[in-house]
Length: 239
Image (cartoon, rainbow, N blue to C red; front, side, top):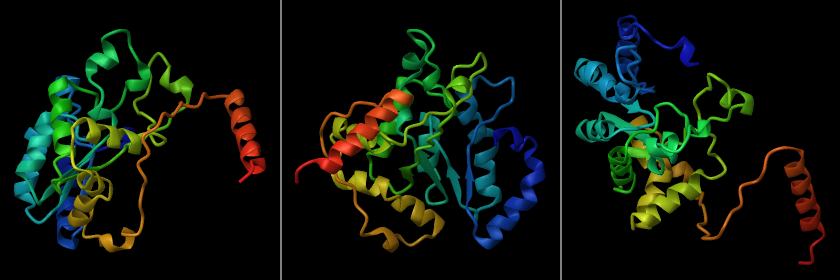
């Protein structure tokens, strides 16, 4: 979808005006892809060049900066509450660019916005565990075929759906953060507040935290056979 993204922001000003008028929030992947901008500075430059100005040009328009990846992004969201909110992925809270590039290129860690420094990771972890309503969960889970991830020109995206909740819980445990703040992040109270969606619809949903090991399943036919065998064993197990 990014191939069909906006390249001339002046062309969408009438759209933003209409969104402000009808109360529709603007959810964006905020990066400035000007070729002269370093890839690690794209988020900060987008805020400086565009988003900061838009919050003043459209004071009634609500903005969600998706997939926060930098300290600059975290700080801007906090400074622009309640007009601006931001989502935080599990992988931006546990990885740095050294993990991605430091000991050989790891294509499965390639995502957009790219993983950044330890300082950025620390800011994201602090924001996620703070309990502040302007930050909320956004997994940005992106499954892709292996051949495209391992290509000469690989594509960005990290598939994290099977482990995302466990990663969030692990970060909160490592940061010694209160459990109710994790509940707040996951239930997206900030997103509901920003987008005007009632939280009451999901009050009865819950997730149990069970501290135990979890082996990542292998891909391919052998893994499928193992899953079928496990299902058959479960059906015939004695209660």
